[in-house]
Amino acid sequence: MTYKFRGQDEYGEWHYGYLIDVSALNDPNTAYRIYEQLDNGGVYHPVIPETVGMYIGRKDKNGQEIYQGDKIRHHRVITFPDNYHTGEPTGTDLDIERICVVGRMTASGVRYSGTKTVKDYHEDTIIENNTKWRGTLTCLSEFAEVIGTIHDEAKS
Image (tube, rainbow, N blue to C red; front, side, top):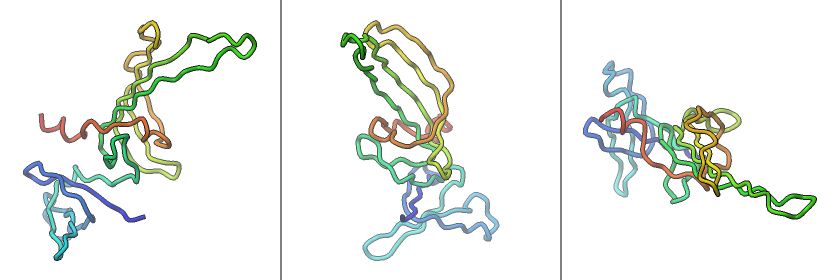
């Protein structure tokens, strides 16, 4: 796997490529640079250290790459099977929406945390609302959509 990073410069522009640590230069504001490979060479972009995030190797349902620090919306409806004994529908379908922030990578996957809202799909009644939630990113990407980053909020 090739490691890919992104970071935001002081003007708010995102840069994607290799991460270069130049902290030995003793300037904490430019301790990291993103090296962007171009057709005729490359460019080093100084980035704000707090905005650096690694590509987690997955894309959301729209094909957008997911990076650490991304906010994602995970939405799906879970339909429970019919009653095994009677064949009748259970009438229980859950509409689950999670708003999460992609975090650090571990041996078992990528950690993320956020809130979860669960509704009865047919009644549109709330079962859980904004419950704190944590998990490991495994098969999430097919239901996930990147909706921003934690750094977008920091600027507002």
